[in-house]
Length: 369
Image (tube, rainbow, N blue to C red; front, side, top):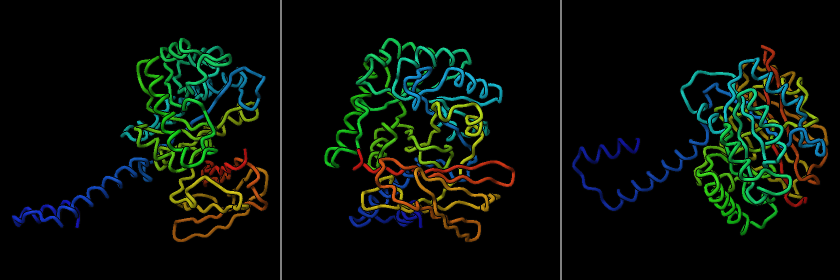
């Protein structure tokens, strides 16, 4: 019996609400609200829409190859998206697209973290040339510092179609903080950043990005309760309608991964639509030497014999089982991973049409500095 049928029955019988009935009603309303809020983070597993999101940092700045892309490569990326009729949206627009009744389109999002000068000087002119929007996540403490954009540059970027997102004030390693401080500091910095951005730009951001892509589940809840439409992580993958919108994956672009062939392979990637993941937490402690990741997904027309598993720094052991149309997969490392701060497990598998599907899970060990 639904809550609505129960209330209707009481009213139809002309029965007054007793204290017991009132308490029961309040409990039901709270439960429905909690369920509704949780469902809001996932659009629908049956919706086929997907979004490819890329993360950039520096442009044409060879001093930092691990976070830099050459201008030649970036221009090639933009030309590929233009020539192949991709719909290029801001991060918040992409979330609205996933939640809408708009027809499916090839959709890409360009995001930039940290607000370095090289974006304003080198990346933004190319975006303007191709008439593409992008989302810039800024940490407000460094705005105006030697290597960063100042507020005048940020405001000019906004006037040229760039969305601004919240990246906290200090860009700290929040997972390094004790729990009694972590969540208070994290929330306060987000609010502080909202206030500073509103002071300088006249609005507050709708989207958020976790510094270093690191978070725990309580941090995702904080971001959601503060009213953000979505939050960007840094593990690779494809955003789709079954993605938790508070931890959206992005493909990193750097000198190692940004040649046009590698970019094309990511732009054409599809989501491996995972229905269930255990554990849900990204945290791994010193006692978890070889953590196992369990995922479930629909078999569909996937060619499971060609499924691949990659774990940074070691080999991957996998176990598969099929129950009806559901695949259960376990992935674990052959050697310990707990000596590294961040380790990515990546699963890829082609389907019978030759399209590749991708899923990744990022483990973080905060004990490793």
